[in-house]
Length: 512
Image (cartoon, rainbow, N blue to C red; front, top):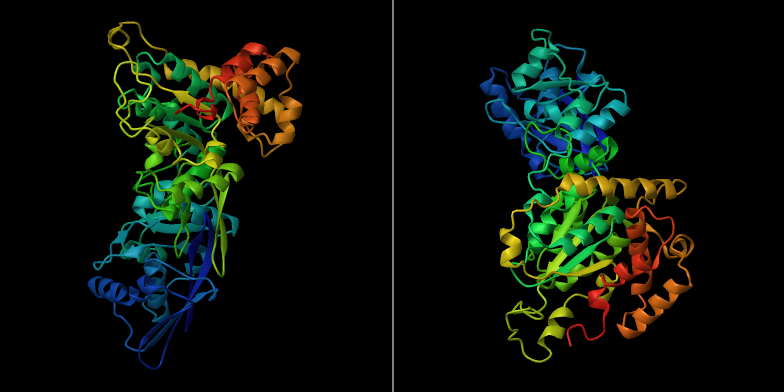
């Protein structure tokens, strides 16, 4: 007797329906075919133990499980439940006609309980697209899948509950959540706030500009000056996630298994801060079955690289292309997968190995040439993709102890929102461009036009400060964002002057 159940395989951030065909016939042995990995091959032991525990029998005849299409590699233990139900139906221990109406996924414990799985959201989206009635899955994953409407989400805690549901002995009401209500409840709820930061007004201003234009930032300053504290608060002033952005971000975190149990739609922008020992594959993504890396987990949010020169050179270099293209392509012999990677990069570093070069009070003890060698660990092409270079100075005792309340994230976010709305109108005809930082060079010439006085100032700055040619476009983009924040139609000379000061590392002899 041939039985069919349906599961799903996740590749990249998309899912593909897998047909699980089970034949119980004369003979001996248990076979799983269709490119299964070791976790699937080992499912026989888990299924057999779970069936015995729940009072069912494992057929002592020949059982063939085919996972189609056979040319897509299947990985993980989430196919235990559909295989087990297929075996029960094929051996006439399960009496139902409804198996083909549902996508079924879940890892079996030896007592027949179900453990949570990853990648539930893209599976649910694909199930709805293909017209399945519902999705049967572990209870811990149900809220995540319930984001998708017009699909019956049937949460079960044990294999027995799934069997009883199919045979009509148990009625399980589909889980329904109001996605918009949940999203609005969780949206923009951050633990940190810029009101916690005393002093550092110039750095707050730079981060406000970065948030308004989607610009990348690097902060250079001595240890303890507040670089990490400021970076962690950057997501709090970015515009709130839209429903579409939240769905994209949640899909990536679902595939990577980072949502945790009973999670739903993400309401805040991600903030990822990998340690400097990270590998290039962990940063950009990859592996035998390609998984998203930190840059994709930071999609629609912030990637913070603390102590930038301490990262391996190869790790930083693989980030250059994703910074430009806003996505990363992982290619393997049989498959090529795109992961989105539209993130803001914020990096911090000490100005030298001892940390006190250019410090107003402490003396740098680094020898001649050491500072320049330290800065050279970060390549020019990577710095080329960072728009704002900000020098962070230590906060004085008076600033730390003053009673005046600092400006809150909400107040700054209002100004950022207004600037982003200006840019949204500007780029209406360009669906792939959402902020000033994303403008290509030709568009910069058209949109960031400056008058004669501005050209003179820019020329003088480039000559006197020794600014590199690559700084030219960056200065114009940042000046355009400053003008947007100020509500100005044209880039004025004061906007250019402020943008020029954010190019510290382009100055010749900065570390000389």
